[in-house]
Length: 211
Image (cartoon, rainbow, N blue to C red; front, side, top):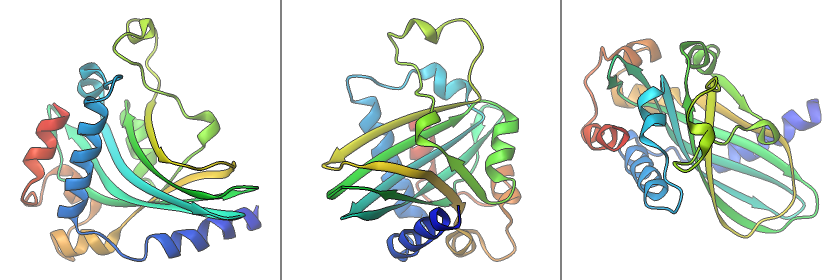
């Protein structure tokens, strides 16, 4: 277990050393959402409407034998019918095995319960196991109607060439540095998600894409 954690920490430090600003993250997040919605399998509007929280990530991977992935993005919580200002988050992951090449991966995570949102924010670390990820329903999926709704939906798009065995999944952490630079040193994550801070310029364009 310690070995796997070490694999996660090293690529995380290497691939997330340069923190994008909240404005850059929002621009990338908008491109990610639009990329899904212009694809052959857009995310249904009901998924956006029913979500209690959303994380939007663009992640890059690189590997030879032991590799890692690192990404940046934003997390927002829904307050009533409105999305909160974005909180900056980062990701880290590790792979091992016979592999080569690189890959860009866009990830959108919908949290459908308040408990899952609290779990995401509880200690600043949230783990996603690739093998247990629940793919969200497509518009043509009959499972989109009726039955219990999973606590979380995942939508993942891959680009580039990559092969290998994923070990340890992906870990999400809150980027306190970027959040302080955006909202001030006194603003907590709770303040941001409650809407008690001024929204960054351009955030309205992103939230409109989620409605």
